[in-house]
Length: 469
Image (tube, rainbow, N blue to C red):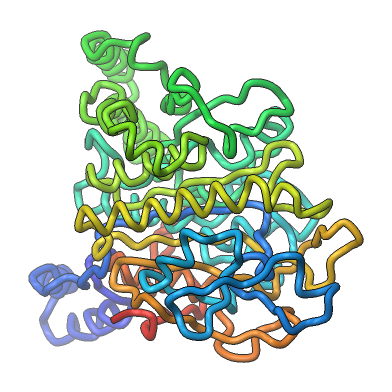
């Protein structure tokens, strides 16, 4: 349970009932105990979808053969033994503020399967190559579990800001005109009431990539996905509609025990609170930020979305995912060549992530905000003739900062060719357990599935406690 009650406690309670102590009394006594202490109030998860190369980011191999080491050179940083790419000068200067896990690994060598695995800590039930899009059988994301716990503790439904937000779009929305929505960020079988609040930002045309080009304020709408904009729907009209809906639903109150109806009611309450809230509109209004700050993050969509994430955690949101998504071939999925990586992807990422770390630190928020920056896989050791690299999920890096994480360290070692972990491999289950641990959520938490059966969120994952100070 979210309050720290474990399966062992429940079993002990069952035995205690034989001696005259009832299960409700035992659970009530647990409520009086201190809750699991959170290392971080919030998580900002920067998801570089497509698979950034370990050789071009944080695990360079300058002594490897020329067809492996790549075109980029390492530059000085503040972390002993860490080789940072010359394309990341801003992050190289700040390496004392973050840890690099060099040994992320899994066997889902597929974008959709990898995206699901990284964001949930569970393997996707769809086989590699068997599909692209979310299904009702998907496992709930870490963000959705955070939302679930907030609602169980009475802090979710009806709040003017949710506990889980996805920016700037649902993953895959700008790929092929939205034909390839990807799994991983949703609540899956847990139910739609725990899905994220997702914003929406469009692109100009099919070939446009707003993630790395400067965007105007008119383009940076960050409208709430599935709801009318604030200009179209005034708060007064929202509450009138709510009243009418309640009257129409009066005849259905007898069905409240039905899970689907209950989920619908909670989702509606949440949507109405969001649209009617001045606080929501304020948090989503980037124009309130000084031009100097916005310029520091970069006026591109990834930079402005990262800045929006900072605004949201400052307002009280616990889990914010920012996608650096693919736009019809222009992405981290760099099979073809490294030009986009060098000229667009690396500079915008370096600018936005370094700005976020400095900004959080200056505001006194870094100690209570865990920042994670990574993709769903890495790239093959051997490059092709145009310096493109293919999928390689057995080794890739992750940057973790804040939220109690020790800065200026690395975790894990890879072999000389950057292909496999030789020390401390880290699976998605371990990453999920680490994020739950940081948020004060028991990694052994079991939540009810569609049939009401308690289901463990992760299987065999262990928090990386060595990363914390």
